[in-house]
Length: 268
Image (cartoon, rainbow, N blue to C red; front, side):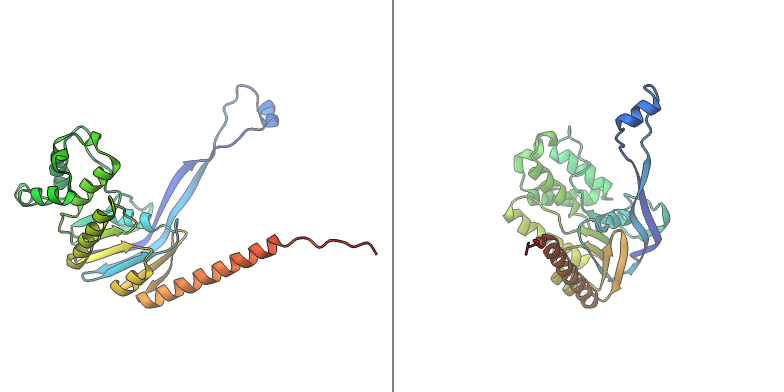
């Protein structure tokens, strides 16, 4: 059984805040005193709760920086929660950051084997998929040379072909994924739709609200690392659109107020 259980999960990163020293501070603290740059906490996710079971298609929506991709990485096990828990049952396939982790000195063929084993393929199952992966990548004879000689587009093609050859129980998708030229992107999107239809549980990050509303069983709307609303797709998408419209109107009104010229005093 495929399942996702996230309970009160938070992800916090620590960063060093660069502090500029003024001439006054420099003189007062002394020439040889070591400067201290304070540590700041970045709360990428705060108090996330999410439950999904076999058959669920979960859409994640929100503006850039809302924490959508961070949530996917939490579900994939790339990040661990700094508070709360995150538990995912089932074979997971993650379609984001797919070009990361190549062995640059190895050939395309060798990377197919290496990455497929990392995805849980056995030697027997991989034998049946090797040629199909090669054909889908459209790299031909370039598979026989080291990956360090590939262009960024070639690396993405190979990574996508390998990643989507898996048969996942839990599929995690970032729809912002761009792979190759237009013709290859059309083929890639068709392949992703096929994977979505056969996976037992799917979580997809998308800015295409119509697709989310029509294909998902529930939607999670995020803002600033927190869940604003979770529920039926039509209901959540409508609320998100209303909020976006209201925010845009408020921004326009603020811009108009700020752009008005100050009244000119007239001398009688």
